[in-house]
Image 1: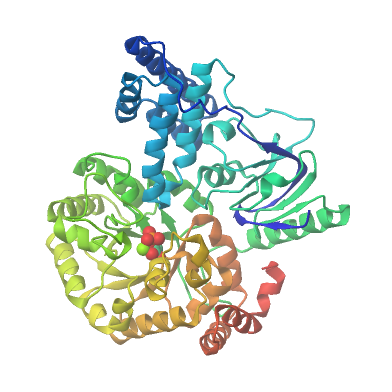
Image 2: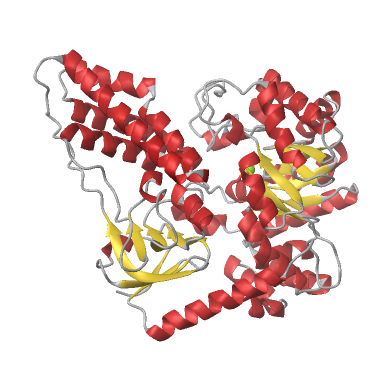
Length: 560
Ligand code: PEP
Ligand code: MG
């Protein structure tokens, strides 16, 4: 079998015998009925779910850290009253407990998958709870993995559940490879936390014959079955050299000729702060506050919000923390904040700032909590709104921030209209932050959830670079800063181009910071400008990337 390619989500090189993990819980037959005593069968189902929840919590206590939080969330799924009601209803109609659990969970699963994004990636967690409960009901062993082999193995699976991986460690697993999952799937999160290389979204990975030795590059996403000794040695050498170079680049973000470009972290809440500090973030460039609101039936109280904001501000005394107000809707639906009507195209619907405008109480509570947190901290708080399309919306948001006593209000530029009229928007606010993920989605009419359209979501597309140029020009005209907080900022090559286009700060997932810091430190402002001009002159994303690299010779030493 030749080389496979997926998405590298946890860097490093792993090598070992492949262990292909398949769940072998037999699906209960569609016509499986119980003996007639629905009450007893309901009790059995409730008992099985209870067993599963307790087992997950116990594994969580043993694992600790991030894994514990994830396993507790899974235990909550097993204890969910809505799911229990669904299962009970099926049992009432005569279905056996095992089949009722199987079907009941299936209905919830569909809802998660339809919601997509972060919620969609929780489907594997739900499947795992289902399989465990079915196993208990059928008297089968719970699905599990060998906890230790003669040497660390490369764990290959369609997808992995946190309960599978939580008790594994670096001495047991050399690398993870999954066919499904994305950068925010639990496999990715836990692999990064464990420091084990991982590749996700790698089609056909489970067709690797068990026992075949496998080489995994968690940075490039390459998976090579049966590599030669020389290939393994070269991959290890390259990874070690890259790590050494990255570790050597420290301090604030700066070009080789001393032009400062603050390097900030994207976070979802206080639990991401340690990692941001570990990678040397100079502050937070995007605090996605919707993660405080996800998975809840009511909004968190102002006190709870204030504590979550303060915990982040306090981690960066004197530093910058950019908080984005709730970006609900589309790929981040919130149960208690539905859009006003039916939305056939939620990405084009009432999301982000539009939803906040319809629910001023939610916005004002959030701004109030932010203002109180800022008054108790020395960090410089900046607040921005997502999904702003017009100068009127920018003015409305800036006024709401002023009324709440907040010192700095900005907007995300993630809709083409905002980039096209950037100067008008910049007149209303204190700063811009470019959301290249959504800007690409709306520029190319390419849903960011649809894997088949990945090429159109490539931030190297010259049309996207044109819009970035327009946004920066509008900000410059009004003397306002313009940062980038979309995924584009974390691409070390594109980061140099963005600086050449005039972007003033870069915010990204924390693990991306060292490579971006190193890439900037190896090039002057002039080289970045030339790379930007070359990329703008190209007619395709590939050409833009290649043309920019010609002006960025320092990348070679980074093995990028
Ligand atoms: C973006 O759209 O680029 C962005 C940073 O926001 P999110 O990914 O949270 O929509
Ligand atoms: Mg966005």
